[in-house]
Length: 66
Image (tube, rainbow, N blue to C red; front, side):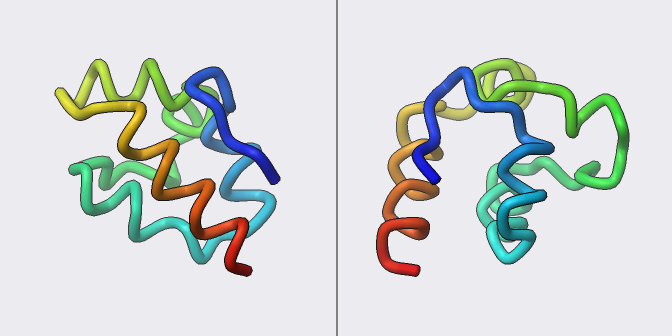
């Protein structure tokens, strides 16, 4: 899987829920909430005041090394 800022969080979690800690580290503790699963990486990072490029990079590194 390749992740971009436009990738929907629910799609990422459906691909591999083991990435949940990356979201928890950015302060996104509501992963089970239907609204959060429908957000893009960019939208979630804007709400939580984090850098979407950093999260995208971490997620892509995870999926490449999987």
